[in-house]
Amino acid sequence: MRRLNLALAERSYPILISGGLLSRADLILPFLRTARVALVSNTTVAPLYLDVLAQALEKVGVGVTPIILPDGEAHKNWASLNLIYDALLENRFDRSTTIVALGGGVIGDLAGFAAATYQRGVPFIQIPTTLLSQVDSSVGGKTGINHPRGKNMVGAFWQPRLVLADTDTLKTLLDRELSAGLAEVIKYGLIRDLPFLDWLEANMESLLARDGELLGHAIERSCANKAEVVAADEYETAAAGGRALLNLGHTFGHAIETGMGYGEWLHGEAVAAGTMMAVELSRRLGWLSAADVERVRTLLVRAGLPVKGADLGAERYLELMSHDKKVVAGSLRLVLLKALGDAVTYADAPREEIVAAIESCCRG
Image 1 (cartoon, rainbow, N blue to C red):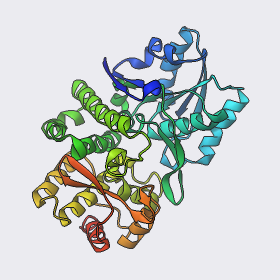
Image 2 (cartoon, helix red, strand yellow):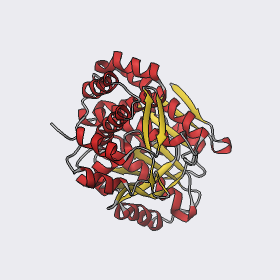
Image 3 (cartoon, rainbow, N blue to C red):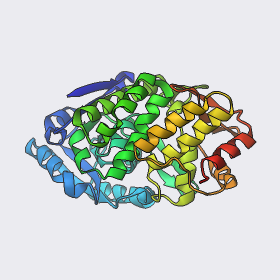
Image 4 (cartoon, rainbow, N blue to C red):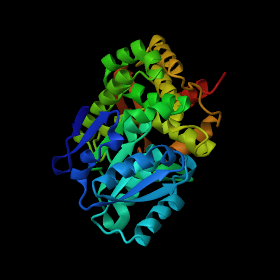
């Protein structure tokens, strides 16, 4: 088993990575306040994995109440959140109840936001079942829902007590979902870990073939990078750099997701196209070479990811990006690359260069 720790003083928690973890109730039991959990999942994941986890917990005396939500980014909204609240209230769950998220990023964000707000906060455990959620969204405590005008615009920071990443769940993941997760894996190499980027280039085909050992290493390395960043800047308040650097490609990508309608593009697909826009803008600012841009493009294509953005029009992109959480005092801060492996937050990119980068990545 691979084991990491996210260091947040008294709120520190372990990240466990291995196959076969869904049946390991002994790993979960120490993190429960009472022998009762609300298990939040969705209509896709629950038929595959809910019984395995629920039966393991029930064997050690833990009562399990399943809460099954509709699947997909389009359902990351108030309606789904209220389904969780309704079930918690109907079953008379109190503040000692632990909410367990079993699913991908949407389920983790919804269940985490419910945990942060139900009776002003209850314990929370993340059991991510997609590559993207195992390497990114399950770690760090960001929770929330989408708003029609912007992705993840309503939410809270609420750290889990435990992250349990069972790599066996990746065996049933659609190829498209696996590729979407690789967008976030590649991100860590681009922003702060150039040796990891080199490793990904050497092993991409084996990762796509679902080599268990290599996927385990990629998840561990990604989580280690994120844990270091979050431990240093939990609430994304650093004036420069800090946790905001984890958003490479996300400002452009969130515009795609919102503009196209939630669920049309997977999050990782939108991040990949947004990463190309950020990389192209970095080139236009004189920081990256054409060879650097082509290197990133080639790796994303090898990972099965889109490198062309949705054709929304540059003005629509800018309008949607103006709602981004990284806008400060009306100034849009973008995560760009000074070099491969060296990201910065930057608020002074000329508007015409941003437009040119968007347009060049949406053509042909």
